[in-house]
Length: 170
Image 1 (tube, rainbow, N blue to C red):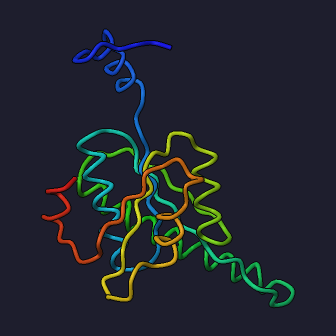
Image 2 (image 1 turned 180 degrees about the horizontal axis):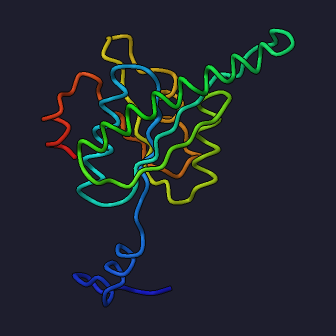
């Protein structure tokens, strides 16, 4: 065990860790308007502190529809997800030169987000968008806010925040 004296960073240990580690912000992408708020927050925060924005989209698996129909539905869902991600990538490019990654998975969103977090130890923060309606948190927020199995911070960005408000807190 190493003891670091009070008022010291241990001879540069923190500076060394910070220079080697660039955290990733995982942003769940859907087609909601409030999703743009989460993307904006992650992009500005990453621009300011370094790291990578990982945009993740999850497509629902098609139910059994018959021969060939499942493949067509899957291809259409994949195309829609790619278009949605590309729209968010253009938004990030407007904010600045920010490193990005994209992930598309198929399945239940909470399960797929957990799998990506588990697979990529660089992911430190999960960014979710809160709905603008007063219905309360959506299912993903409720799931991850109370889930201690994932060792990542969860940032919930209110869908009603303006760009100026987001920049001020990022």
